[in-house]
Image 1 (spheres, rainbow, N blue to C red):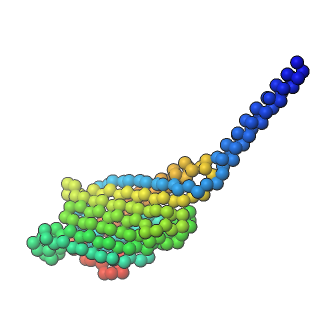
Image 2 (cartoon, rainbow, N blue to C red; image 1 turned 90 degrees about the horizontal axis):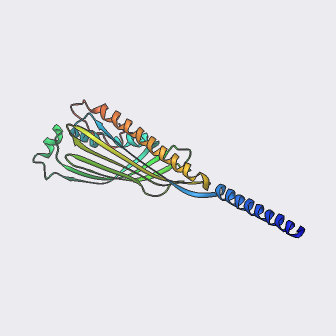
Image 3 (tube, rainbow, N blue to C red; image 1 turned 180 degrees about the vertical axis):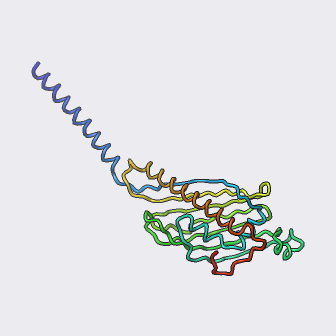
Length: 232
């Protein structure tokens, strides 16, 4: 009986030791440092009290790029136009139509942008972006995406889509960013939440910036084009 009693105690001890080992292993695993890619996405739609024809003029003739980029925590430091195509086949009098703000021309443009990053959480100072825009009589689509990773920022992409609706302009903006972070695996979900919050905050700032930019010129009878290198 004594031997059996001692065996039970030994077995109990082994079980406790095993449980402790498992708990220790789980704890170490949960707090072990890993490289995790956090993905943040967001989308916003808003309506501008501005006819699309005027919105189109403002976006084409004024440098909206700097205003929009700066709202996302960046600063535009270089802008290079890689190519522009213009289709005036739908417009009988393209020059006159452009002057009076009723152009039907279709415009496609490619740009390369270099922006300064102001986010202390991203170990990089600059980011290069490829921007493609397609604009026609009643809609606009602008896609801006990173050319290569910059520090912890693996990927960055924004889109702007605008269309004519009831003598107003409906704008939808989207953002997706992927950021590499090193942290305990237990905190990866929290990191994802923070990147998503950052994406949502960036879009809210861009909405405010776009509204202010359009309002600045919406009541102008003539929208004078900016000269190259001028950022209004």
